[in-house]
Image (cartoon, rainbow, N blue to C red; front, side, top):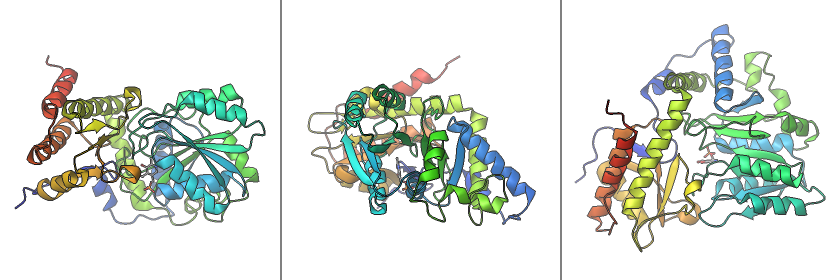
Amino acid sequence: MTLKHGRAVVASPGPSIMPDRVLAAMARAMPNIYGDELLETSNSVFADLSMVAGTESNLYMTISNGHGAWSMAVSNTMSPGDKVLALESGIFAVAWGESAVPLGVELEVLHAPAGHATDPTALEARLKADTAHELKAILVAHIDTASSVQNNIVAIRRAIDAAGHPALLMVDCIASLGCVPYEMDEWGVDLTIGASQKGMMTPPGIAFVWAGDRAMAAHETALLRTSHWDWATRVMDGPHYVRFNGTPPVSHIAALREALDILLEEGLANVYHRHEVLAGAVRAAVAAWSSPGGLEFYVADEAARSEAVTTILTNDVDADRLTDICLQQAGLTLGKGIGDFAGRAFRIGHMGHLNPPMILGIIGTVESALTAMHVPIGGSGVAAASAHIASALKAG
Ligand SMILES: Cc1ncc(COP(=O)(O)O)c(C=O)c1O
């Protein structure tokens, strides 16, 4: 017997729930790929995406997932034997660095203490010790989707400047773009990676690389450039076909245009406020559920808890049984623990196309599954989340 019926709810941290308008935009017939209409749409998508990322730097799109964008970033800026420093606070910065190793790039990892963001003081000390400036780039995930840690990019930039180190600052904002403010130029980021499938509410398959002046300068001497990823092959003011180094991803361009319209109609300030409130509701629920030996936040440092995803350690509770009950009996997809978190954590994604009834439904369903499993919980997460949302509602 199952209660799974009607529209399935996805609370895994990406691909997130796609608005019907975005899906409908993808279902249109193919346009003339050499025509002005597609070019105009594409131009507006490039401009509005860059506005969301807070940058006037060059934007290159990959017809790929985030891994493809990682590859584009490294191959356009590095040479064999170059060394990168990955700031570990989960799994994604290290995975990015590891993806560069087969290309001949050396990887060093700076670990953050478990449950914490990267420590800027530790970074500054490591960079000061690198007097020969062997480290060519620093890789960091703004929000790490596995751990749910949110790194402070401004503090990281400050640490690099305090050390007087010339390494490029490369930030993966795949899990943060469209969920929390991101200001590439103001924050002094040299290269930013984004992707479609989370806060940008567009199916996976297209990803973004913004290259600032220092990344463009590194490109001039980079020896890892490949014919397909090379920025030099992607002429922005040339024929539209060249912008993508091949046939443009027309359905994804249409979907992104619709997703950006949805974001801009709501207003970015409101989008970020909504994420903050819904994340606060999830955190209120997790705080209420927490109990000794039972559930607890992975991110101990409250300031480093992200607005896009929350990772919940389950200790003695079988996390996979919880996620299976939610999925198979209630139609709710949660994020499972990944990497070191496999089997001992679950994740609630609170990114993108979500509102209070959806988030309260997600929290209520998790609480029902916990109750069915006889997991001792500290208190009602539903009540705590509802009270949190109430504090954000105006009653006239
Ligand atoms: C922060 C972050 N970076 C990179 C990736 C990898 O992206 P993809 O799976 O699209 O290759 C993910 C995927 O979830 C992610 O969350």
